[in-house]
Length: 244
Image (cartoon, rainbow, N blue to C red; front, side, top):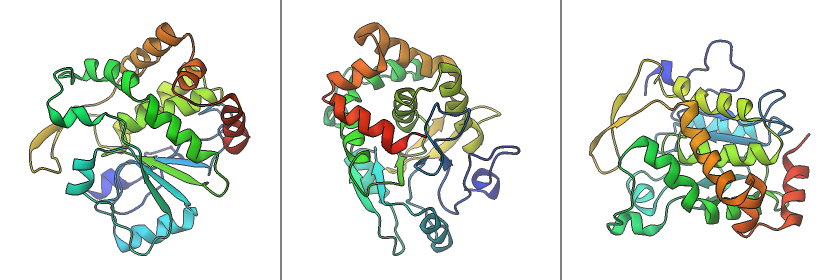
């Protein structure tokens, strides 16, 4: 990771520079995420290259919970580093285990991924909401590998439940292109297995395709999480816990 990748975007107050953690930013803020207030929920890439200095900066955020959306294989290959941090970590993978057992429905294109994500993210989202409303759980941080796709949809659903418009959702979602150095196009990287892959920029159309699938299938984002097992009471508690 270069200094350029970890520094805040020019003119953006959302990014939090933490050495060894990519794409870390506040998911809340006036005019950015409905009523989700700043300092409650953060998002980022994984902590597998977190430095001791970075840990001190994370400590200053007061994190009580870190929710890891990666698969078991990713955790085994790139475990998060802590350097003495005392937050609780929960493993709530977005994707089902059959991804790793040869599920033929696993998407091959980026467009297919964003139709696959909402089909399977429900249990992870419900468990995430349940954790966020637990007393003492906040501030919290959500992350996957680079904080772009799985984290992107999860955070967008939470922001939507806090009243964010589609324009606000996509504007925040697109900041990952800045946070990951993807403004100039796809970038190669080596994954946790040592395989060379390509990280592709996100577009507003990708997130909107997920949201349209949710609304076409369930009627609303709220109905989607209720169908996943979230209760009306938990939704109310989420809005109180995260909202302004």
